[in-house]
Length: 282
Length: 247
Image (cartoon, chains in turn brown, cyan):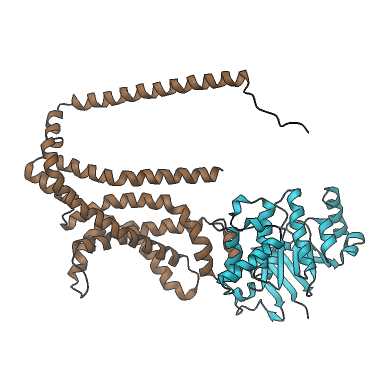
């Protein structure tokens, strides 16, 4: 019996690795230098602008910054609350509408037609208009049981608007599952519903996570649109401070809060799509 | 009485007539092979039997019940048939065990413990005892196809429909799948299969049917079809198979 060959790194390979390492060092230093130059250029252009002292005073006032944080942060809690309530509702509405659009049975035609109409309408109307119409229109009906709490109305409006987008995301996910999967499930005797539930939806859900998270990042920002109803959330609070003090630093505070909220979700989305790419590559 | 009776079956896809009046009877424990060139209608015939395609005309009876009747409960018909596809079509998000027990549990209302016990037994029988917890993408093509066969078997079908189950496999893996089908025959399973593996077909079939352009041109025991076919078309097909080294 002969022994398995043992790898001894050749001189040629060692030479190759030295070249690659030096190339890597050069790439890194080029990246660093170009970044420093770019930032320096931008800073110079902004600071040398004729209006800069004025902008610095009204947007970057450290004192105002600290002063407006409590009020804006307080309002921001409302944004988070709206987001957290609306998100699961949107998932439910989106999934139900997507499933309704995929039904075949003639008895369900009205539901199918209604779902299509819903998506057409609410994808077409700007979210701001949906919020205004729901916020002022629903309470005006004076029907019993219609809420007039602004947070609830905001959640309803955002759910209606985003439900339509999310329904389309789910639908594209469902349609991306190869028909042979359904054929296999149906051949085993599973009904259409069970084939959806056990075979199609679990696979579709995995594929739509990234586009769904993108929609949710967008939703986090759009919670500020509810301010138009007079709700004292972060942007509205910042506006109040700005018009009282003639100083816009509070807007900067609100922006930073939104960024702090969206960045983790954005990075998580990147992480998931990188993972999905890797899985597909392997 | 035959298990499956196909009478005057017609099927076309938008002007392209794929099946032209097929007549076929399959007895219990019989293994029927469908051979013929690609596009001769073999796969379509199987897909009509498990109602994945709706026939344009003609009838199919399963155990005396007409399954081509539009009022028939298709899910109930499919519960009595086991289908295996060329591309395996395992459910990638489920383990081997879940793939196999899905239909027994959700369709046949078997309890989880019993379904898993039966699945374990099938896995042992076909040499996959250690793969119950694996996901399909961790298995070789041959192992995946054996799992697909077990998945179809787990519902205790009356008839197994095998559609070119070895066409996507390399020769080493073909052998292990063919061994499984041989064992099924020995256990008395009624089967209809389409195949390009002629020596296997000759070996395992009770009846061989040669399809040509949607017509069931010739039918008989393998010894007859392979040695003294009646039709020139059959002879030409077998000749080309021989030449391509697939016999």
